[in-house]
Image (cartoon, rainbow, N blue to C red; front, top):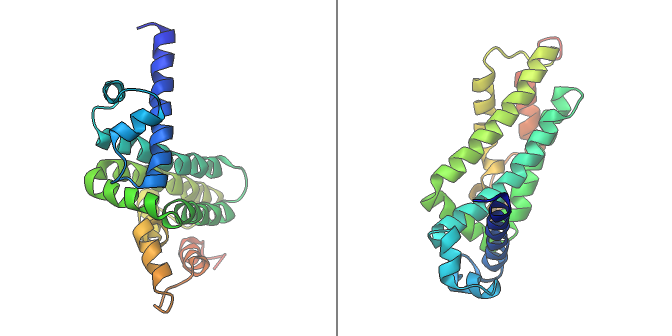
Length: 204
């Protein structure tokens, strides 16, 4: 395959995913068919199947794109200079904000995420692993600078991610929003608690 052909194929795959995401937002994942996607692209369904062998494969591609956008922002925060403590706070609040805005505020995208967790769990697992690695990267920097008293960085990163699950997981964010009277720590309170646990004794 020539470089031009490879470029064209990549462009076509990206176009399919862009249109599929738009239709998932407008119609909902369940109601959108491969025929709908093909029609919007002025393609035949058979041509769409040349690039994605099933609707599930398209769904996984869209999910990867959406999750990848969060990962790009997370890694950008990891790469920023400066103290680790405010960057860890920024990282955790940014993931929460992006997931809240994209998945909870949009009921049809929320439906797509729910299906991804049921049918394409490996995509979600890979995403969470990337997020844990970004969190671990900031914690490692804080340990190196003396801000954090941490000897097992991977464990600290995993515990931090699990503690933030209620603020990261779209379904859990939605549940908290739908039950405003239910006891629930605000995200800043949870982050303050975790940062206090990570801080060196002289900072405490």
